[in-house]
Length: 296
Ligand SMILES: [Cu+2]
Picture (tube, rainbow, N blue to C red):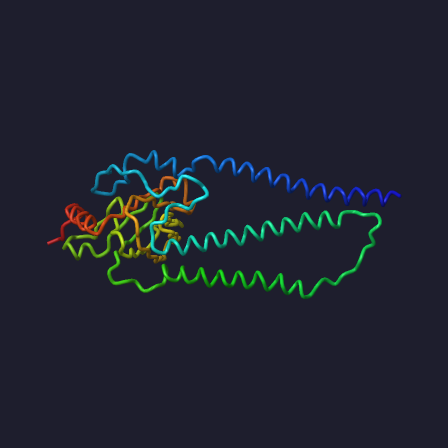
């Protein structure tokens, strides 16, 4: 009969399509894996940093040392240079592992069932109401996993967003605009008896002391991203964001804008330099010479 010929074709073509999907997926994965062997952008950048740091009003552009913290492969996260970074990395890999296992299990079941229930002229259709216990299990299990992840994430997030600031923290105001970052070292005008807080071209912070960032935007949405410090916070016009972190490694690190904010979004790379507390004090004294005097 005509109709049985059609359904036979339908049955096998669904299976062939599922198989083709798996093959295409494998090919794409292989291409991605091969590309992963190439050094990523960050490593290339580390070998060839810009000749100058962004200049600010009243300050000449200064030569910068190579940016640190790129690992050189896509399998590793950028070198962690902040105290809370390990907790963030743990959550990242935990979520990646859970997602990976779930993905493989679901795809394997998809292929298995497509094969198991492929067209068979001798099989009789059966009617099923489903399996109540199974449905409860596959609903409750993800709910429990997701809720546990929310709790674990919230703990880390609350610490760097809403935790009480230690009294010895370095306070910095970061302002984003198209297309640069500007920094203000809060409290330095008062401390050095100057006319304005220091506004360096390269953000300097001392090692081992908490850095509190107040984040603002002058124009559009930007996102303040310190890959090495596991800090990323949107800069929203009209709002002041707050985030804090404690640097545990000296070096010069990248500040990136992680929000596509306009034509020169790519040009928003800033620098964060972590120095020893002694070097930091010496740097402040140098900056004090550049700061405007107090009006008489
Ligand atoms: Cu931006």
